[in-house]
Length: 149
Figure 1 (cartoon, rainbow, N blue to C red):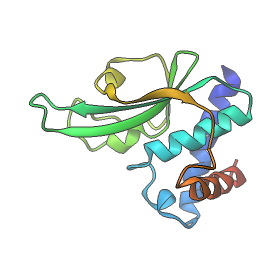
Figure 2: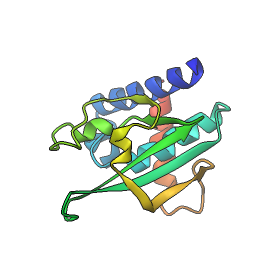
Figure 3: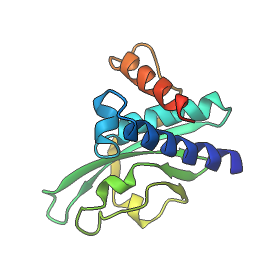
C-alpha cells in the first residue's frame, strides 16, 4: 500500500511540475480538466511498470436528477481501492459533483457511486497499447511525466 500511495502521489506531482514548466501538449495545459481518461491510462502504465496490479479502468457517467445533465469520469481500481488523481477537475461543479480532492486513494464511496458504469467501461488495464490511435501521444506524455518523478 505504501508503494502504491508513493507512486500515485509522485505521479500527480510530476504532472503538476510538467504543467508548471510549460511542457508542450494540450494534456499538460488542461490538466486535470478533461484529462481523467488519459491520466488513468498513463497511471495504469506506471503501476504496471512497478509490479502493481491487476489494474481496473473504470469509466462512468453522472446523470442529473432529470437525466439531462451528463458528466463522464474515469478512475482506476487496484486491490478494491479507487485511485483518482483528477477528481479536482470538478471543483467548480455544482453539488453533488463538487470535488476538490486532487488525489483520492480509498474505498468506493458515495461520490464514485454517482457515476453509472453500466454503459461506460470496467475492464482490466494492461498498459499503453501500440494499436491505440493515441498511443504515441500518450507514450510521449508518459515519458515527459517520468522525467519529473
